[in-house]
Image (tube, rainbow, N blue to C red; front, side, top):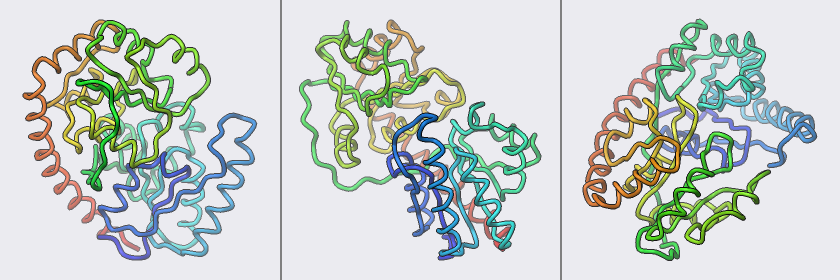
Length: 329
């Protein structure tokens, strides 16, 4: 859909950009580049990491000379470098903004974040809340909740129970894992598989987990998707409003019934094949029991939702392509 002079840039490893990989594949963008120095976080590593990634970004742009650049945000520094390149060369850029891009940490300083949004062709966001914010800044925003994902033939993942729940987890502050583990302790008929690379504080949570909870650690893509495909249910929760859940989207495209948080955005997008819960122990238990009792109905509903969301995607893809045709340098 886009020509060979288009490049997609992500600061981070491929594991941090599943949406960008799907986006690039669906739009025929062959130049997808992940630039990162280390997976370690914190102020000790930030200067070295960002300096290295900035130099590599400049060298990449000068070598490839793209006329259109998609850049993932956060961080804003990656967008700033792309903006400067485009200002010097007459190229154009689009920002693919994750929900986290609008957290206060990533929008500081605010004036710079607003300036970068105004200079972009558009900022791709997941909901109308962020669209309105960018429009208020004087920029243009394009709402694209999700992109249909196809998966290669997946092997089965060894599971212990007859009703297995994958808890999509990264040990991030917005994930109510403590409440999930409390819910699991009262559901002996369920087996829970919690994904995610360990972070600070994760060992304490793991030590207190009940016996029907299994921590998989970080899984390569083929094992991760095999785990989702082999399970009966995917559980993906957040305590942050206006946050689209990539894990919930993966469950949708794998045809897996879903339990997710009861936020308006998630309730609207996942309105079939899904149980929405408050992020506490009792309601998570209620949701799991409800889904198990009416499992076949939820399976049929999630398949119906797949069809509807694919149709929506075709309309969105056409609209974005027309936007790009009208702004191509």
